[in-house]
Length: 297
View 1 (tube, helix red, strand yellow):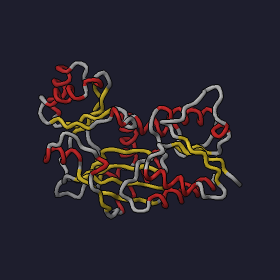
View 2 (cartoon, rainbow, N blue to C red):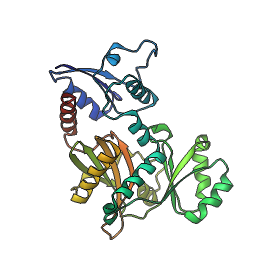
View 3 (cartoon, helix red, strand yellow):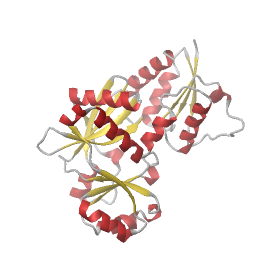
């Protein structure tokens, strides 16, 4: 049976290019590619390819991506990740709630993993925020929403005066609520765990915050930080399985930091459909999984 598939993602993404090329070769897949940064909709006359899709798969880039998932839900079109799951991952507060529930429902995770203390707040009143933040330092201020790369930030505050630096740098965003995590001292590296179905991959790179602390660069392009693979332990593999089941995620990634001189990790972030940079031949693994998923609809 031929399946009509809509794949929505940014066209210039290196991994997505490879996946699209391989999916287009499948004889039982009629693939329609949609770039949410270029192709928008007349809402009264949606494209036939979308209206007649058997499944819509979305790597979220912007609000157009979310709009497409809403359309799929309204019209009962299957999706790889449904709009409720994606919105949960997009919003760091809702994701925090969900992850805390996972840890509560699976107390065995606490043997190896922790989740940092966190808050939501607003910095419109800077003096009020400073008074609140002072006894909690050091903290990391993060953007409330994580899919918007132009309004995304992680900012370490060790001294209360650094709040002023944050406000000067992100003045145009001060009316937004922010997500705040307690800063956890770690070994200086970030372990990025990627999940594709039942396969789990690990990439380790320098933690951007520690790069800033040691080198004080004006800007850090995280995509250029050197990465290498690390071996996934059984504990991390079990965590991946639990997160997949509890959060209804089939393709996702999460970030771990390791305490200094301790075999314990903190889960600090999670992302639906990540970039998968650094994994060898990931296009083959991802396209194989998606092809099988489509056939089993």
